[in-house]
Length: 524
Image (cartoon, rainbow, N blue to C red):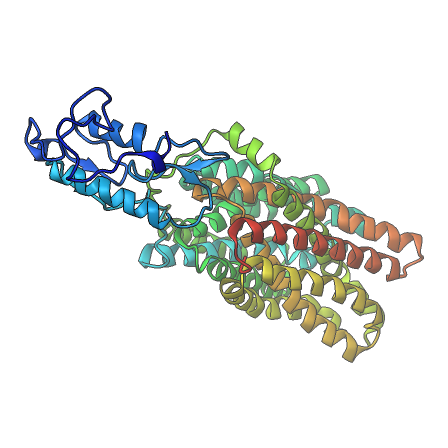
């Protein structure tokens, strides 16, 4: 029986008429309920009423209408409707009103208030603890990645002192292995972060980093330096740097890209300070003394970071899914694979100019200072772009900001081929510093954007940084092989890097399209 063929529910119905709700029973709209009305409440919002018969009345008789396709759960008096269907018709509203009036006449209190939706996870978006976490994460990245990005200073020292008998290509494996170990270990670090072990990760990473830096001050041979700088310091950095960025994602959502940019600016500060500090002390006091000075400076800053960074207590409404199920969900997510592929391609391009800009400037610039301070110029400009790109991403969307920056990194890598004069090279250093600084900052936020809730931030970021590790491991060696194969010409290496960034940009464009459809918004 459809709703259109129901007998009218009006006061004119006689007491001898058959009840439309309970067949075979006499029906009287004015009958007094056996019990108190307050004890027989019926809600239209979906809450379970005390008596089952009035609820059965509505569900079984009034809206016993078969529907094709999926249905949505409404209140008991609404009945099911198709997903995305328009508002109830005038007839449905009238029928619902008649049923409500009839039930009220019989003494059943009826509520028409809608049930409150399940609360979503809220983000503080500020507060003392949140901003202290930003400050502490900035200190961590200043001490760690700031020194890692200063490897060129160590390379110059090793070539003339401890490792003078080794070719530069062999020495450079210390720096590339350090970055690979760092990013590769970020996957397991992300899993531990999602399980709630952030405090242990930060302490263990800080202690391991300090052990590595002070051990490095005593190292004399290639193996000793490799174990201290590439392995010990790389593992320690991998344990804590990803969680230090992910912790910000638990405090901020609307300002996420901005605060990640602030933290990432610590890398730029360190990459400007440490080359100047170490370069001067290497000449005046020697390698061991210089490294120990840097180590004690890091000790003070990391102690402060461990004090001020506190993990946020996640609401109990957030259920941490088992790792296996989360991994399966990520593996089936096309947007995730497109993002990881896009980030991989663009990072291959990013590191090629960073690794070879000094030697490139030495070859083409007539001003020795340009070659000496080329990395410092890039990192100084990156400080501003890392913060600025975060602000833009929070307004326009993370993908909408990352895609142009990825494209710009590729274009500038191609443009480096033509920067064969001092003025052109300076322009390249400025533009590339802005582009790569903004890209590195926003790319970390792209990983977090894919997370369904805060319980996935660490894992998704860890997987993303693993692809960054692959980019650091294979990108520069391939460029070096192309450089050797072309007798020192940078054209092939830079074309390879620029092409990889363009492919990465295309991947990110497709990933953005998926996110736009998911969120029904172009601001992604």
